[in-house]
Length: 276
Ligand code: C2E
Ligand code: CA
Ligand code: CA
Ligand code: CA
Image (cartoon, rainbow, N blue to C red; front, side, top):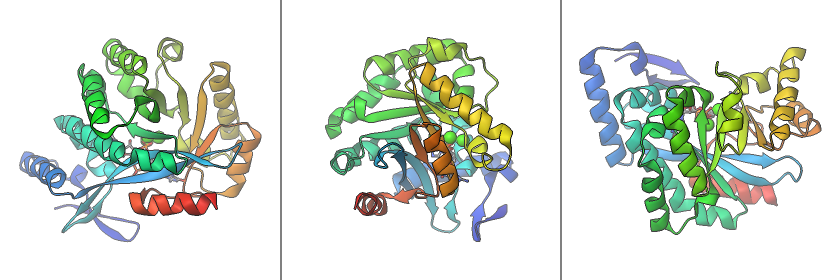
C-alpha cells in the first residue's frame, strides 16, 4: 500500500495506488468502516464576528483506520464520489449530526453545516431522505446548512438547481463552499436560493501577505452583502486575520485560530469554555 506522511502520522494514500484491485478493496474497506464505527463525526466551530459567539459548526468526516491510523478525507472523499459511496456517507454524517443537534442548540450552536457532493445534488430523493432522518431525531431543517461547491453545481446545473430549490423550500440553509475557486459565472448566485458564501481558505490565508488577496476577500464580503447573503471566512489561522475580517464586516469566521475540527465531546467542551 502507498504511504504518505502528514503531520507526523503515517497515512494511507489510495490516490497514489490506482489498480482496480486496490479500488475494489478500498470500497469494501469503506463499507466496513461505515458499519464498524471507524468513521467519526468531527465538528469545527464558526464564530459570529460581531458578538464573538460560537453560533455554528461544520461537520467533517474522519476515518480512524485500525491499522493505517487517521486517513484524511481528501484521501477517500474523491474516491467515495467516483464510486457513488458518498451518498451513503452523506446520509451517515447527516444522521450523526442530527443526533447531536438538539444538545448543540442548547449550547448556543444554532446551525450545523454538512457538505454535499455532486452525486448528492443529482439524487432527486435527497430532500425526502434528509427529512426522514430529521423526523427520527426531532430536529428541524432550519438548524442545518448544506455546503455545496461551485463545481458540484456546474456539473449539471439544471438538476442541481431542482434539488437545491426543493431543499430550500423545506427550510434548509444553503451555502456556496470554496467560493472563488470555481470557474463558473456569478449568474447562478442570483438564480439559486443560496443563503451563504464561504470564502475559500486560500484567499483568507493569503490576506496578510499579498494586498491582492485582501482585496478579493473585501470584494467577496461586499458582493455577498449586496446580494443579501451571509459571508463566512474559512482558514482563519491567526488573530491579525480575524481582526481584519471583523473590520471588513465579515459575518462569521472558521479556522485553526479558534479551533481545529474536534470529536463531538471535545467540541461541546470547547463551546462551553469559549462562552465562559
Ligand atoms: P472543506 O469543506 O472546504 O472543509 C474545510 C477544510 O479546511 C477542512 O479540512 C478543515 O479541517 C480545514 N480547515 C479548517 N480551518 C483551517 C485553517 O485554519 N487552516 C487550514 N489550513 N485548514 C483549515 P478536512 O476536514 O481535511 O476536509 C477536507 C475536505 O474534505 C473538505 O473541505 C470537504 O471538501 C471534504 N469533506 C470533509 N468531510 C466531508 C463530508 O462529511 N462530506 C463531504 N462530501 N466532504 C467532506
Ligand atoms: Ca465545507
Ligand atoms: Ca471550504
Ligand atoms: Ca475545500
